[in-house]
Image (cartoon, rainbow, N blue to C red; front, side, top):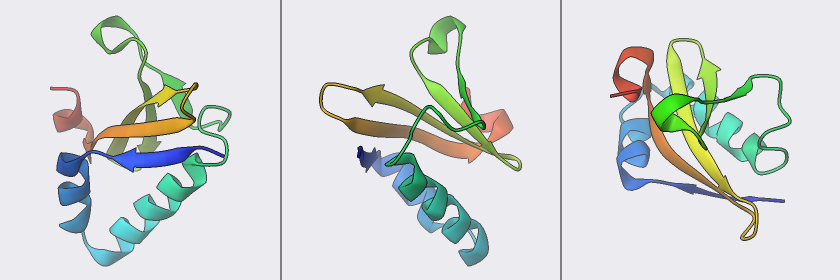
Length: 86
């Protein structure tokens, strides 16, 4: 089982979301601890984001990377599709 670490910026954004959306994303983050990259909605990123993975949740994106030696998922960005890749 992986440990999920959410970056301060992503956690702050998550707290400002409406309750229903926040709970949906928090549930998905807890699911990441079980199987982070074997989920069908997780896609590896390319280009300058190589090494990162993304999950699409409606219009929102969760960008994360894995440390397989430490068994940790680092969530770097959570946000709307247009803003998260900047």
